[in-house]
Image (cartoon, rainbow, N blue to C red):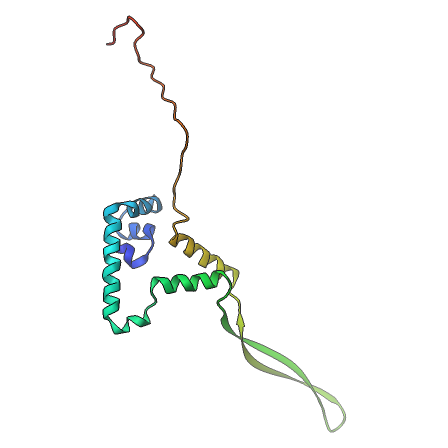
Amino acid sequence: MEYMACGDAAEAYRRAGYRMRGAKRQGARMLENKGIARRIKELRSAMEAKRDRDRDARDIADADEILYRLTRILRGEEREQKPVTITERVARTMPDGKVRYETKKRIEVTEVAPKISDVQRAAVLLGKQHGMFGERVTVEGAIPVIIDNVPAKGEQSK
């Protein structure tokens, strides 16, 4: 249930009351458990069925929409509107012939690309979704086994 609430295996492991040490590794191991994976699938199906029944569910982003938005941020396609203050110095000629400068400020709304930190965060979230950052170690090759207590020919073992 904790995993469904937060979506992060390590955080769910900690919230469930286990030690913080090794939570990332143990959380990932728990997700590989067939029974747990089956239960998560059941809970997701139940949530989707409930969402389909509720009219207001259209207001809640589903997983595909979130992944789509994160991908747009990662690619720099998503724009953010920010107010920008523009200061101008305007020259005005006075009746006595002197030039006076006035400072005028105006605010314009402009669209800006996502910051590098936003792009990096989107990349990390998408990478986690695709399981790219798991603590998997692959060892290839043969491991030598040394047996040193084999009796010599003709000796009797104790």
